[in-house]
Image (tube, rainbow, N blue to C red):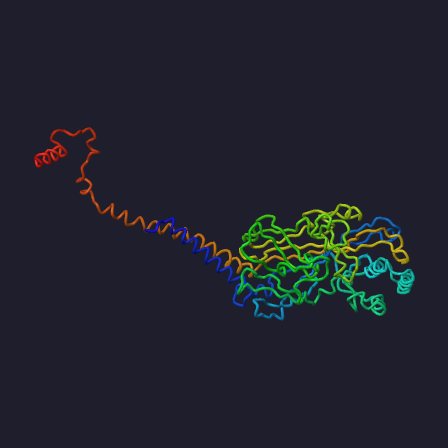
Length: 487
């Protein structure tokens, strides 16, 4: 007979097997899977929120004083993403381009794209830094060119110009005499390359043939590793493309992904479990070592030359301009960085990033990725426009990419991948109870079928507890009869 415990174990094992198989079928990159359309046309409304650091004292900075900034924003843009050129390859991979476009959202913003912001003139100050070790004659020629074109160390431009580009005669001049210095030929803007463009050709594993490699990046732009950095480890393309991860996560799981904007792979670590709209989630955050310099965290030595810890030099993948990536307001960085600029107030609540992921499927439910772009500036002898600027990493802008699943996609996800598995989970206990009832029915029937007559016909020693065996008891009679028979 199969016991109830054995039945329960067998059913639970069967349930887990069916559940695992269902999840695997629905998260792989295949047109028949539940998540395919979600992967192809991301249904989550993403927003890009921009915060500018408005320079309060540009003239004082030129005299060698400490910079003072005022945070302006957010200026919010709705981000639209869609994949195209989707090609399934024979080696269990799929290649695609993901295009992005941005649309300004005045109702969510604290300001308009026509607002003016005082910013460092990145073209002038970056070009000056690139000329630091050049002959003095070239520096004097550059100073004269800057003066002729009316270029200064700081500029006053609109949000729209800073974001999406502005015409500058300096660009044409540099492209004419130094054609390989800058990668752009027309307008220059901090986010000009992102709008109506793709993030490169990704080739990732589908998980159809080999589920252990699902979503992992095979190649980016045909490369299995980049060549921006100074170590093989830093050049590796690890993890996914940053949209979905392998299912069945545990607190020991980490999130790895390759970011074309940062030109590197990044890793997030587990912080805590929680829920999002009734869906269980794991929250992943950035480790304190993400932007640490090589002396604090040796594996990051390949990203150097480094300055203070907590900022990453990205000049090698940004036309050699002295640009640095970090958390906003230099959060989680060397305190000296924030102390060098008046108006910065780093704190975890406002400036840390997180991803909330459904651990069973590896699909993100809610995210907020916050990063800051800064420019290293200082006086360059021979270039008058830099005057007496003291060396400082000056924040330009910080931005947040955020999105949360909602509406019909959330309801479908909840029903198919959360509610139904829960129903199946509790169904095992209902069936277990039903099995116990079915086992008890024949026992109860047998007891009831004996009837009251059967009960009274049995020797009732319990009703005569004081009756001891006497000389005429059956036991003695049987014994006497056996003795007589033997004799």
